[in-house]
Length: 461
Image 1: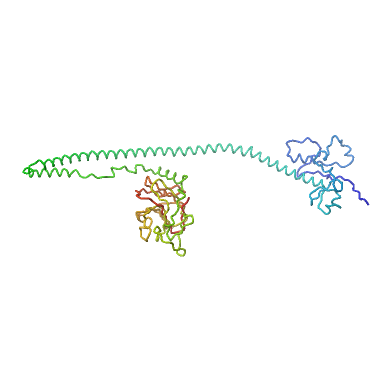
Image 2: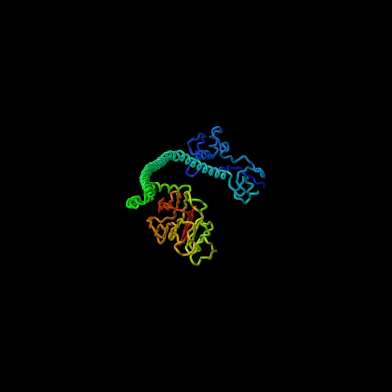
C-alpha cells in the first residue's frame, strides 16, 4: 500500500510579530523610512488569507506573496534522497529535510520542527538583533552628538583655565624670585662695599704705620751709626720715646670684618625653591649606584640582596661575620659607597615605620671599632645626622642635639649635600618641608651614613 501525502500549507496563519509590536497586514511595500528596522522587517511577515473566496478577491497583480517577496522563501528545494519538498528542519543535524526523512529516513527520532516555524524564529531573532544594533547605533550617535561635543567645548575651557593657572603660578614665582634676586644682589653689593671700605681703611692705616715705623727705624739706625759715644749715652730718653712710639703702632690682625658675610646671600625662599627643584626634580633620588657598602655593615644589621635595605637584627637572629677593618663592630651603623667632595648630591631614604634611626653623612676617617662616641654617629666632630628616637627628632653633631619640631612623621627623608656652598639639608619629601639645614666647612670627602635599631630603612632609587 502506497502512502499518499497530501500537500498542505505549513506557513502559520497567525501573524508573526515581535512581542509588543504590530503586524502590517495591508501588504503595502511603501515603508516609513523613519520606522525602526524591526518594524520594517516585521512588516513583511504578513498573515496569510485562508479561504478560496478571499484568495479569489485578491488580484495576483496587487498582492505579493511571501515567497515572491523573498521574506518567506521556504519552498522550491527538494530532498536529494526522497525528491520531496524540504519543508521540515532537523534540530539534531541542523539541516532542512522532507517529511519522509523524519518518518522513515535518516532523521527518524530526531527533534524536528516545521521549516516555516524555524524560519520565523530565525527571522524574529534577526529582528531582535537588528533592533539592538539600531538602539546601539542611536546611543552612539547621541554620544557623538551630545557627550563628545560637550566634552570638546569643556576641554577647551578646562585647558585654557589650566594654562592660565600655570602661567599665573609661574609668573608669581618668577616675580617673587626676581624680587628676591634683586634684594640679595643689593645685599651682596652692600656687603662687598663694606668689606672694600674696611680693606681700604686697613690698607691706609697700616701703610701709614709702616711709613712711621720705617722713619723711626731709620732715625734710630742713624743715631746708632753716627752719634758719638759721649752723646749717645745722653739720648737714651729720646730713644725710649721712639721705641714706645713704634710699639704703639700695634700688630695687624685678621678679623671677620675683612671677610664677606655669607649670610648676605642666604634666603629661605631661594633655598626652599632650590632644594625642591633638586629633590623633586628628575634626579630627586640621586644616583642608582648609591648603595650601602657591605664591608661597613655592623653585625647588628642585615643587608638586603640589592644592598639598599638595612634591617635591625634581634639577638637570636644575629650571625657572626668576618672581620673587616671597615666594619662597625659595636654600633648599628653602615656607610654608603658614594664619596662626595664636589658638586651637588641628593638621595632619599625610606624610613617607613622605624622608631629609631639616623641618616646623614660622615668623614671616611670615622672610627669603626669600639663602643665609644668616636664611632657613634652624631656624637663626634666627623658626623652630621638627623636622628629619630623615642618619638623625638633632632639634629646631632659633636654630641649636641638640636630638637626639631616636626608635625607629621615623615616616611621618606631626602638628603641634599651641596659642596660648593658647604650645605647639608634634610628634607621631608611628601610635604616639601626642610627639616634642618646646616652649613659647615667640610675639609674631607663625605660618605652617606645610616644607623637603625628598629625595623628597616631603605635607600630609594
